[in-house]
Length: 284
Length: 243
Image (cartoon, rainbow over all chains, first blue to last red; front, side, top):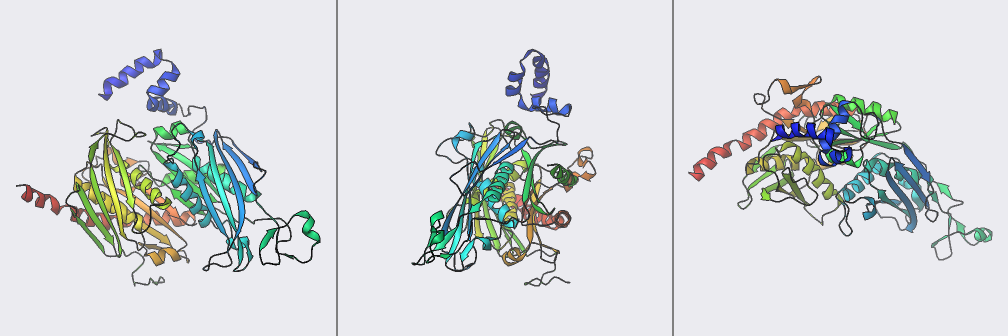
């Protein structure tokens, strides 16, 4: 059945409009481009899309960032709250990471039903941030055993156009770098309250946090997703490319060159490709 | 050896493996797979007619349901479902029965480290038990990198928690006579050296990861022998039951 089909598309392709060919035979459209070592948006095979980061996008949050990789857009906001630390780790604060894909981001996502990618990316993000050792949770502690910061990191996908994990990780890291921990003091009841500017005069309150401070970030994890099709490796796929090709690899390296994660669910790949990924990553 | 494992194993030694199949009577295929204390039960139902909305109707699709041993289904379980689905989709021949869904249900009986590899091995055995056409088998292994940069295979839960990083690797497994000569060479490595799936956790150097890959590949031989031995006798038993 496939042979007459191939002959038919060869004939039709010259008569059909490009858009129609793209919708009806996505794999052939894609492969025709690959044969010329180029992709449908004109990028060379190994090139990632333009990335832009805008810090402080949400003024009311303690830290925020808006990241765009091509058209994929992620907005992250961090909210800090004081909480009582757990008994097992009295000197550590807590970081809760949540990834949301609201229906605005893609026609596949419907309201009410969480997207398939949502819990997976969410878990991958929290795994990455804890295993990379970027944040020392002890920095989030206020009074040992009594009070610590709980940081809620919410990442909203505003436009899902491929490489969701890369954009989400970048926006989480950017927001954490932008995060300003508010100044707080302990009042007479032993409770922590936010310090406003006038309170600087009052002696009765113990200053727990002198001034707003930032978190120190150690090695920062950066990720790159690639898709593998036959013998080709393509970096930073768009949503259209991701839907055609089933095999993708996400590699996360940190700034000290350590491999945080190599995540690959899908078809077979060979070992030498990982060397290529490393060089790709450095290019990023 | 410099490594002192709490249960006295050498770094390359796997825990005792146990596999049984056709354990469930209503399921079309089922298998349990145990590596040491970690035990997983997998059941396969299918192929059933129809595919889910977002799936490609031109191919058979696989649906995975992961059930943890305690608690409600959480994010980690959804991630395992997705990994398992993608892995199994790459080993099944999906063009034979298009527009069908095969359900694989994985029930964790006990988790003592290397849970995902155990589940993948169990699912693969269950698929064979159900008679789903497969391109090749999959064998899964867990390698972990300890604090002094040595690599141990098949860690228990305690060893996993103490280690710097670990990787779950899944390798394809064919009988050499089946694969034709031409297709077995891609680039410099033969096809059997590819990895189907890799999930890592924790920071390790790139060299450590490549060593893990080598160790893992070397062990697939042992695992695949065990797997094939356990699934083979069934066919003769089935024939006698049917007859």
